Length: 270
Image (tube, rainbow, N blue to C red; front, side):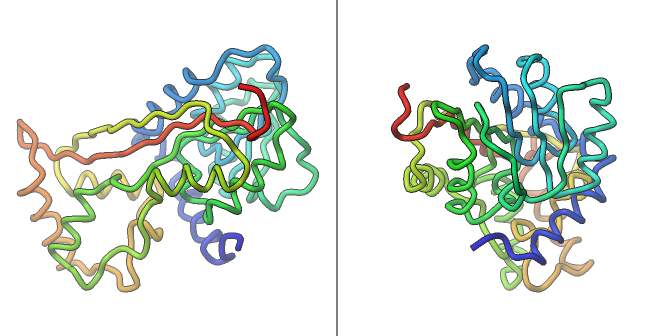
């Protein structure tokens, strides 16, 4: 099944609202894009690239620099993010931006590479997404991506379960095994994979929550439950987090788990 329409609209709305503040808080996403681009061979045969979930253009800029002669099609379901990426990369002539779910866009054609950084976990279910990617790859095409996996913000989820156990988040991020199995089911073989754990520090739990809000993350299925937290819940959550996840100097930390994968069609030569 494709993503439910109201979920898609909610995700797009939240990211559009955060478009002008996203980059100030996107340290993990920026590092993930940098590592992903290093994992992709500088292959002159790559002349056409589809980017899924381009956001504010963090990966798009790196793709344009590494593959200056390639035609890049950058997609995102958030109109606000597309407008921000256009503004950031207005001097680039080889990029076409499209607002919409890439799985439902007609006439995209096939690409030498399909890529995405820090966004595929927002496009469930995995099988539907990966099946569509497989149809968009040219022969010997490359699928290269990074995505957040289960264990990301584990401290925040644990704190929430301790403080308000009746208001757990609706969904968990996919586990690495789930992602890799889905790729195989969809006819994609893994050429390279890499795991990374990133720890980010904040002055306080309140600063962490503000950062997540200004990235457009709060309110989604990975951050909220059926019943929203009230002010009292939030105050107790902040207090618990500040007490249990301290760093030296009084700051607090948050962990992100990132999976990097380079894949091809199962019958393609390595």
